[in-house]
Length: 264
Ligand code: NDP
Image 1 (cartoon, rainbow, N blue to C red):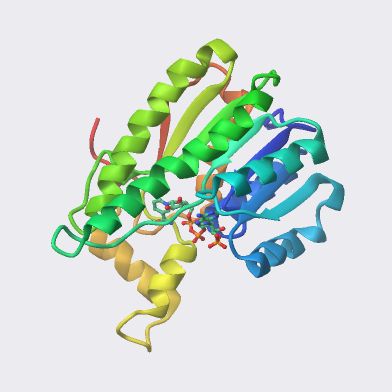
Image 2 (image 1 turned 60 degrees about the vertical axis):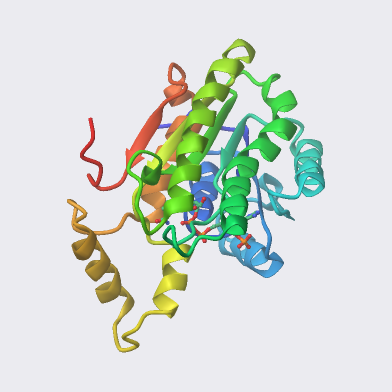
């Protein structure tokens, strides 16, 4: 099935790794042109190189950009629009979670978590909106977490900030309807990606393989599907929401958690 995004232009924040990189790959596979960013230049270059054999250099654009730096986002979006002539889809993926309970979360941690979750969306949306208003398939798709609905004490600030982002996404969806811009989110449970690889590096049992470590987490957390998600499984939901295949869907969410959410 086609996603109907051939020759359309997508921006993916945090496209150099994990879910973002698989989203970039899937968009390219379906004929879109894609610009993506990240903070680390070498990771960004490596992501471009990993795609270079399969996709045309003319359809790809990378730029170093911290989504919390307004001027940098402005430059990234401006150059993307100048390179491809239009922007049709924005996928806000850049970010990470903070593992800390109430006692160990300082005021500055609260501020940085709220800043990351809100401004990683607000900064790109502000810059991309004028281009989206000119598109016939305009969409914003936000990567969010099941923590927004199902808070966890060991990620207290991330959970609260994620809930706020879900509320914000709904409101943006309603405000942007008049501009023909859809806004949706995916709610992730646990997906094997850079975040988990970094936690694996710090595991207590250094003998444990990645596969055993990941399987142990799935079992301990009681994920009904018995495993963590793959980045491409999150990417598929994101590209569906970004594409005209979901043309009558806005202010909505897709749960990508392997059945972890029992709420109705
Ligand atoms: P990865 O660490 O593999 O990917 C994160 C990507 O975002 C990297 O490309 C990273 O590049 C980039 N990034 C991070 N911060 C910034 C920033 N300030 N500006 C620009 N780019 C940035 O992890 P995931 O693929 O898992 O993460 C994708 C999203 O999914 C994140 O928002 C994460 O919080 C969310 N999520 C993931 C879950 C999971 O289980 N994997 C669970 C719930 C939510 P660089 O570091 O070079 O900037």
